[in-house]
Length: 464
Image 1: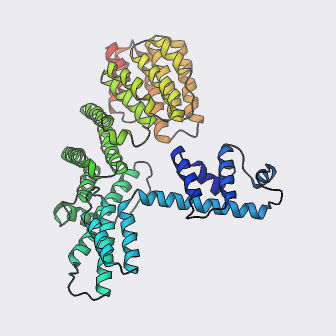
Image 2 (image 1 turned 180 degrees about the vertical axis):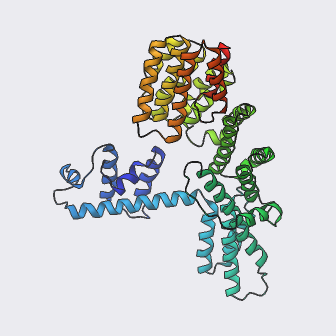
Image 3 (image 1 turned 90 degrees about the vertical axis):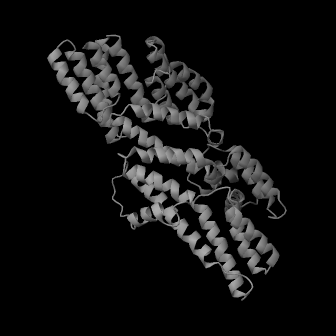
């Protein structure tokens, strides 16, 4: 597909948005050129095809008099209309932002009663209590301040404290939120970022005038969880707060908050604290039971896979099987087949039904490096557990070559899976030598970056 801004916008629309946009085009308010409507519908039918202007002209979509220049104007008009539609749709979804813009428009028109009514709506709004709410409330206070001060209405009190409080509260909440994002990103990108006023923000959130603001409190707990992971009280307080107040935040923010908490659990598990496996499992079950979150968007195929792994690790096999069958339809349609094949293969492996597991793994399409790595890891375990050492050694050699040659594998994953290969090989070769196996066990215990460490430790325990 040629890189075209207009087609990119059109093909990003879902079926409900396409229906709404079609009605939007026919609205007399926009007085749209009928040719724009025709072009839009033609482009929809060409999705997935190579786009260029000459193809449109050759299609005889319009009269023979249509020139390349005229077609470019039509594309430009269509592009602008799609952008307008998306902006208006987003505005409809954000009543506070809508009211902020409306207040400024009403002020320009000197509509006192409408201005006062809209301001009161904005001031009393409590449906969402996040940082953006504080910003829009500040905007409403600023509009009110400018409106009445410019008209010198002495009978109206200009609440300077409320004006400044909303601005400062927004700044503290947003600053804490961004600090959480930056600190979390450091796990992936080692680029150093200077965070100004970091201690001051924490101090204001802990004991300042904003300590009871939900938006401030949430990110205060999350930030402490990131910066002081050894203090498990931060985890407890953060999880308790979001569970109690999640209805006051957007779905996106709730998902982000839970992601921070899930990452905390995963770090604890990787650090050798198995208690957090159950905590993570319980957290996932809380999310699955949250209709607001589950119906907001498709469930991630990687979250789906992680939950299967965790539930099997906890020996929740029946729960896992029921989960796969029930929640597979919560994934994007194009991801369901692959996810079903891989996760059922993993479930069959846990049941020691190796033939069925291998059969399903053959159907997994390696559209992502994660499926490639984990499928190879399952095959590794099957060959080891069935004592098929010829196949195992060949597979380990091919697996090592794959890790060495595939540039799509991150350095972290390369190390983790290389260590899985190395320790599996040592266990397979020295399984009957107690002294060497004692050395392997000791080395594995101190190894942090290794995939399926629990499985490796279990194989050693079976031998000795």
